[in-house]
Image 1 (cartoon, one colour):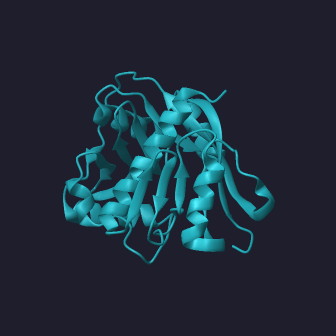
Image 2 (image 1 turned 45 degrees about the vertical axis):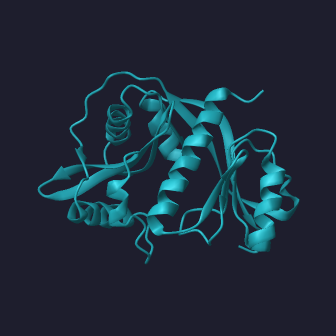
Image 3 (image 1 turned 45 degrees about the horizontal axis):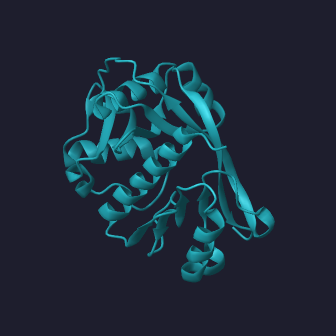
Length: 226
């Protein structure tokens, strides 16, 4: 049986997709079974996110009617037959109950700071496209945080708020405390909501050291030719 917390985490991830697509001026649909792109997605984003267990195959079929063989999807509960897909990566949904920590990371609240934040993030996630336009700063459910040292952004994260949880993503920066500091920023923005997200590899280990537990598996599936 799927952990309800994983369902909440998948829904929050779909909320993040919605915020990014809206900021980019891209069309999308929110469906009972997930998020569905109507325009080609920006870099690092797929065409859909499954948010309801048991509905992955149906969402994929809907997306393929629009995007054909190019479709990439977040298989949030590992339900899709891999026969026509390649697993780009596997990860784990993560959850941390509110702990009340403080964070000295700064809210990124001006276009200049956002540009600096994206420049620092882009050092590890390069793309020629501007991923987070200034319109992101006007979304009340979306926030960027960063560690500012000597006028430079040296670490950061994205936080997005849903009804029951707050999501943590795009964590970057050096130092053993980076993930814990990012999680504290997320919790503060979430006003006591549990913090969710997904990670893999060394980032998953960092999340677990920061008090997160794993609550389910997910996969990102892409066309075999990609």
